[in-house]
Length: 237
Image 1 (spheres, rainbow, N blue to C red):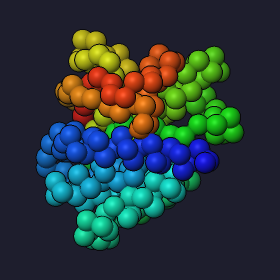
Image 2 (cartoon, helix red, strand yellow; image 1 turned 60 degrees about the horizontal axis):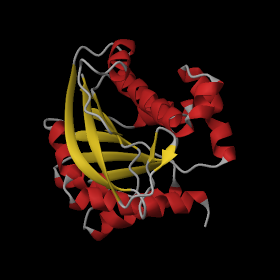
Image 3 (tube, rainbow, N blue to C red; image 1 turned 135 degrees about the vertical axis):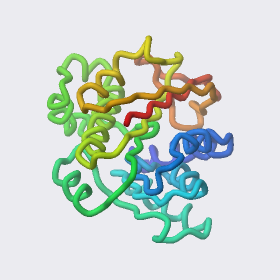
Image 4 (cartoon, rainbow, N blue to C red; image 1 turned 120 degrees about the vertical axis):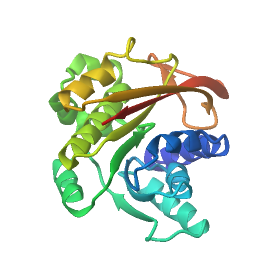
């Protein structure tokens, strides 16, 4: 099985678990008052489905065609149409795609929830120039390519929200609670993109590792079935 399809199938298992546990519902509660959502990384569609259930219209973006196809099927199977969601296959790390997306689609908020991707040597190499532009060095990228990729996509999502003049909502997975006193990373993004306010929240949860999308913590693969995690909610306006 190729890495792209494997990632889509593994993430689908994890995302369905999040949906059934109502974790996505908790995330959606942070978006009260924002009608149209631009979703950076829709995966296989369970987060998108939760957004639609919560009354949002969605512009859903993912670079993984397998994920996009699964998401379209999930949304259609639940009776929703293009009036509820527009799906775009594309990579927000690509400047041309970002510019086209910015010019064509309006939104009230940008979200970037649980960034992830498939991995192989070619994929990592293709992102090195983008990661260097973001500000990482080669040693940092080699040490933790998944974390480097996540930081890059969150940064690009912030760039989109900044240009469009709308807030951004980020969900990250962690082993520790993060707040204003313990967070240098998101606060640095707030300053870089001139957001005036940052709001934190944390939610203790479970995630499927073995059998779903495998979790890597501090560079080590976690082979447990269910893993304790904390969803970190960061809203910047």
